Length: 135
Image (cartoon, rainbow, N blue to C red; front, top):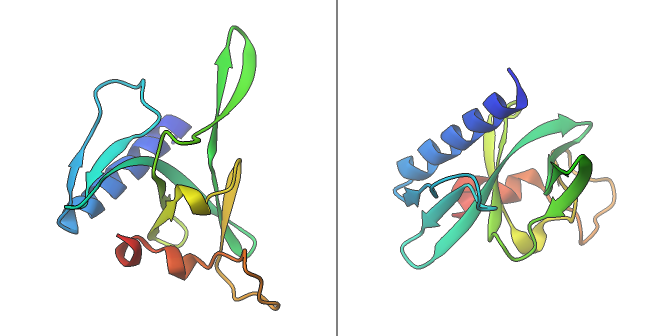
């Protein structure tokens, strides 16, 4: 499966889960927006960027910036204030996660699967970010 197919599968899985949770979800027309979905929670409209995460050691990692090529030059673009959060699918854990923009890193975000030996305020436990708990 190529990266486009993986992304499409992730987006479809997240879309189906949000609808099953009773949310209204809209898909923007075209590929020009930085968000993949608009999620109506009943009180807010959230701009959602869907990402595929993977297990790397004792964390789930996903990228929070996109790499594009403009005129032959690679450019890394972050999402800044253009989205409200990331909906993440990790195939290895068979889980979906919601990470609000304020909890995301600039280039990547790491959700800890294993309890850390030393407690630190910046530790993000994957269990705290599961989609069904956060939305």
